[in-house]
Length: 281
Ligand SMILES: C[S@@+](CC[C@H](N)C(=O)[O-])C[C@H]1O[C@@H](n2cnc3c(N)ncnc32)[C@H](O)[C@@H]1O
Image (cartoon, rainbow, N blue to C red; front, top):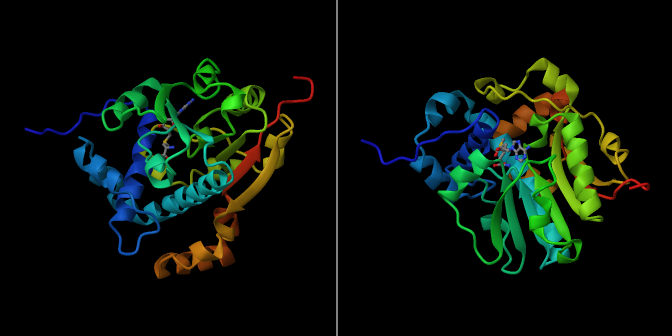
């Protein structure tokens, strides 16, 4: 007999288990770069074979968490400028960013597909400042639930989400947000078409959801509207404060890749945009 929570997710939705597990594993490490006890609790409560899926991939957990920490830093930065701002986590999965960054004043929305959000509702509840919204990036029917542009400023986040969508969907989704909330910020990650073609991602090979959207250059995204890329970074340009916290094993691996396969470190990039609709919109 098990009291664990059953999991019934579609192929793309099921990928939410990857970052959840990565945060739980990293939290269990000595001197982790990110602490997420909630992820550990949820992993323990789910009827899901994390061991079988991920046992051989523990090293990848740290790298995924580096991305998460960078996203958190950009959220902290936004909140320093706009303590009462609105943050919208798109494709939230079982993310616990709110728990990590809440300043007691922000408004927060967690947006995801129906099956992912149904699972999320078993572990999280709506509160006065935090609400879950069913919605698909690329459709704009859910945007009205976030309030008007005057309820901002807005920061939208999509971590490990847009890579599963087509370029046309990504473009449509960004431009819909730009039209509804001009001047909002959007934080997202990309992988290069070459990395998609090489199927190099070991973690992804255990899933049926392929990466679809490849992007080499954030200027492509800028050109879809009057979007402005405020920041871009890869694993080659981690801030010094974060570099110091990278364990020796990973530092050595990074040095090797920097010298021998820099394109691998460059293949995954994080970007922060300011969104504005095209002049004619
Ligand atoms: C790899 S998981 C990332 C989860 C979360 N961002 C994190 O870092 O823990 C991908 C997530 O994107 C969601 N997703 C996929 N397509 C989506 C879409 N069109 N709109 C919104 N969410 C989507 C999935 O349901 C899933 O929760």
